[in-house]
Length: 212
Ligand code: SF4
Image (cartoon, rainbow, N blue to C red):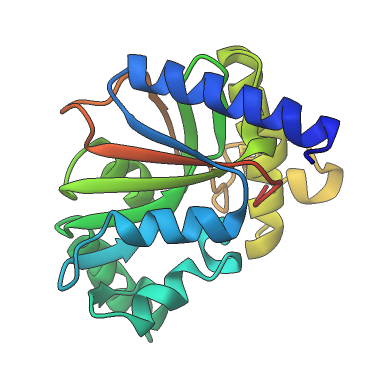
């Protein structure tokens, strides 16, 4: 028997999936991270080249490790030993068959919002990899585009800034100050309104809180 929270989450999740499909994304709702992981793996044929962005969601749910364990040609930027090697792996990832990432926010009507420092992740979302798979926890769904942008800027970006501990004002206050400091991690802001070509981006919405 589902709890009221699970019932509400499932109705919301399936409604967002319909909105995503209306914008030509391929979209799925999975109640748990385990089901989402299985769905993601089912979308990627063996021997495919697979790369990913700096998402905590896909790491903490075990998806990056599952690709390493499977029969895939993995391009893992985490294995770069120098900044030059990491940059080279970022470039290789842009030609992968499948690029795996999360999103910083998703509006209820199916628009993705993402902020990037290096730019490799938003580049891959826009163009390059043949397919993009996005894993998104239900906590990242926002009621509209304005709230989604605010979430990406004031929640996801400052938390990401703490991962790198550069000299940015959000490290002191926990919210965005729209900075232009040399250490700023918010160089690019990408709003993905529709998926073109259709179904290139596959969004898997997880009915659990995942990532930030
Ligand atoms: S203060 Fe700067 S680094 Fe921090 S979230 Fe805002 S733009 Fe990004």
